[in-house]
Amino acid sequence: MNRKKGIYVFMTALMLLGMGCTFASCGSDDDDDTQGNREVAELKAMLLDENGQVFFEAMGGSDYKIGLLSKEDAIDLIKLYVGSDFKGQPRIYKLDDNKGTIDVAIGDNGVYYFVGFAVEGIPHFRLCMLDEGGNAFSMKHTCNVCGYSWISTINRCPRSGNRTYHPYS
Image 1 (cartoon, helix red, strand yellow):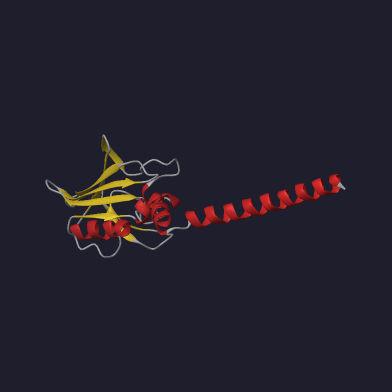
Image 2 (image 1 turned 120 degrees about the vertical axis):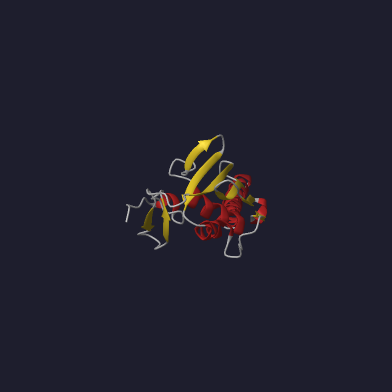
């Protein structure tokens, strides 16, 4: 009789352990689906290449650059990172769930804006949005994935990020 009781206790313990693991994994799935985690995932897709490196052209240190033809183009690009409420004024945007900040500052000497990224899971860097001043190498590009259009020397869609490369159009 003791042996049957021992097997019964052992089987009950296994069932409870299995149920506990099921509930624990469901809880971690919910944690991954927070607003902050979604924001970080979207930023990673736009800012990092397939190797987890910043895909903009390096200037030195933690500064990277993108050339744009107008301040309006710079504002449109910043809206992709911080949301459509950006009106061109300096501001620090805080991601949900304390996942980091995006610091937007007005530039000078041929720079429209400096955008600093201090976001969890993304290397800390500053993006300098340069005035190309009618650079002859600037071309109009249209993303064949999301349809976004931009004019720059960079032919990689700033909205689609590391998901695709785009030919010059």
